[in-house]
Length: 456
Image (cartoon, rainbow, N blue to C red; front, side, top):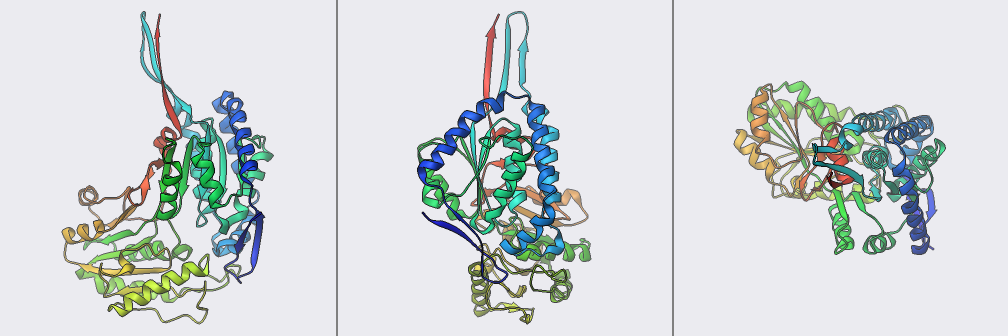
């Protein structure tokens, strides 16, 4: 039997290790979930909401243990306090809107007919969660799926092996049945076999483009619904009327926070020519002051990347760009070990012939280009295979809307970035994926419509 190993980015040690389930054992768990889901869906909506919210608070009660665990597993500095704020915010909002989002749509109720459309749970939902924000990305689907009456099977990334266990412990402690919310350890082949054998009624996957293709290949012919959030190369555009200091502070934080390992992190910035030099100067000043080091140290502001192979890809993209004429602005930090600890980098003299401006980097690096006008910025922002978010910096809301209407992304930000608003649909286009999470639309994707046509 294969073991999954979490290799800590702090020191390269094996931090956690768990055996994977066999195919037969996994099928047994899923069959239990399918049986338990019927009773779970029969409970009142308010009872399901109350249990999910209690489970969220049970996770919060573990936060002092969770924060250093996350540092060991994926490298985020403890000074940032973990993810419970966003975890709670998203669950609370989905609970708040559940009754409205799941209410039947009444068409007619007269002397002759009662006609309406209900929203009913899919059944068993598989959630495959990533390591970069392992609690927040999981709760995006887990909370509304359970509230809507589904059973949930959670498979977490190997890099964050302990997260699913923590969530399962918390959820079961408040009375959510073990069969209704099950954390599992699966290898890729078993996961694909389960999907191909039609054991799930809906699958939500957050991860790489190649991972998304594997999901689609496994589900081919099963007609299983898929929600996919895949790669990103999110742009920022700074216009001449922008608040420059706010734009620099926010966009650079959006590029570098969590060592650049954010789904909607900023990976390329376009600045109107008149502000370009100032923007770069201010950006370099901010990044030069970062403290790269052990994430268990309160003084550390930038931890290691989650795995040295992720850092190797970022280093390769940077070196390729430099060979093609790009200019680096940050001297190598003393704590850069050539492995997971990577110097954050700002690049200029970049262009879209370079992978650094096209391929997902998912690390602490950003390329900055000057642009002449909105038309050039729009063309460059759209010159990408991805489409998650774009961040526009201007004091003119109408201008931002007009530009946003021309950008192929799932979300358009004005004067902010790298934030997930649970009231808005979290979605993407192109190779970023399909479907949508959170908001009322998130409930629509986690349920199916069922029509009632009743003649009296």
